[in-house]
Structures are given as structure tokens and as C-alpha cells.
Image (cartoon, rainbow, N blue to C red):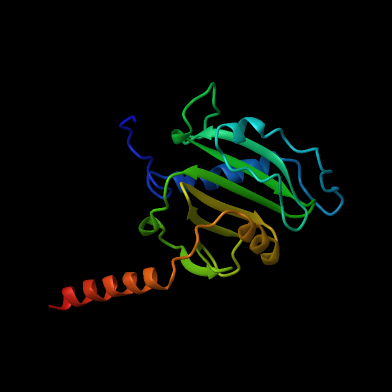
Length: 194
């Protein structure tokens, strides 16, 4: 077992800003997607075998006919990979479209540091806790397992909701776990009063 430092959670060191900048770059560099652009045919998507072989969870499609059209792994500073670097210092950008909507999914190893998410609001969706920037939610961020997922979309809310619901989520805590967490919060709060 190696003694490695765990990567910083998104939100620290500008990682979230990097992801937002990457999305803006991809959306402006890509050909415009409009009503006259046909949705990609099945099998026309990028080869993701190398990403899956490196352990990245890459769905080939998402609900609402969203097909994978972009899949790339990059270093956290945005530079492309040049070899078989360790996935701890990288993220994956996946782009999906149905010909009208665009949904970008960013996946990074680590756990979400929710305390660093200023201007994001916690929401319960589909039985899972996620953070959104605005109520209409073209964006969402959450942790699942050893990964942090960030969804940024130019799509109707129902398309975004379907994409977010289809991606991995941690199981919600059971009754006893929720009670224990609430008792801990209450004791902490009472300790501050005394």
C-alpha cells in the first residue's frame, strides 16, 4: 500500500472553476447543436474502452436519448494526458447530446467537500442528496463511492433530472444512521450553548 495524499475535493483550489471553464471551452469549440442537427446514431460515440479499463464509470447513454459524443481524460490543470498517468490527478469529461440538448458530466476521484460549495444549495432529488446552483438546475454536484460527479447542462430541467438520476449515487443512510447523525448534531449544538 502506498502512502499517497488524497486529492483535494472539488471546490478547493479552483477545481470547480476548472470544470466550469472546461465546459465553456467544449461548448464554444464544438459545432452548434440545434434543431436541424440529427442526434448521433448508436455506435457513433467515442471509444471509451481505455477509460473503463482505467476504472472510470462511463455510461454510453443517458435517458432521454442522450448519446455520448465526447469522452476525454485530462489532468486537473486541464492539460491532456500524455501517457498512463495515475487517475488520482485526473478527471473525465463526458459530453452527451440528443441533438438539441447538451449535458456535460465531469467525474473526479475523491469525496465532495460540501463546506466549500458556496452559492450551491442542497436538494433532495430521487431519494438522493445533491447540490445545485439554482432552482431550475442545469447543474448538480454530488459524491458517489470514490467519485465526485458534476453535471452542467444546456437542457430542459426534465432532461437534466433524468441524467442526474441515471448516474451513480450513494445509498441513502438508513433510519438508525439518520437518527445517530441527528443526535450528534443536537449534542454539538447543545455543547455550543453550554
